[in-house]
Amino acid sequence: MSLEIEIKPITDHERYSVDGLLVYKDKFGNWSCMVDLSPTQMSAFKNYEKTVINNPRFKKHTKATYKSK
Image (cartoon, rainbow, N blue to C red):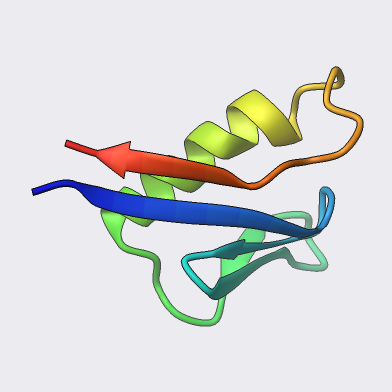
């Protein structure tokens, strides 16, 4: 069964929607969410952070969909 994780930027470098859940940077600069993300969601967000958020070549962050196997 394949599962899709959708990540949408709300405010670049600060707030993102992961499957409708708000992920944001807290006052200490750590990523936080009001509810725990699933391991698949967490893995997808970490991958998005590495490839998009921390990549200076991206001027505007884009929506991404990750598919698990």
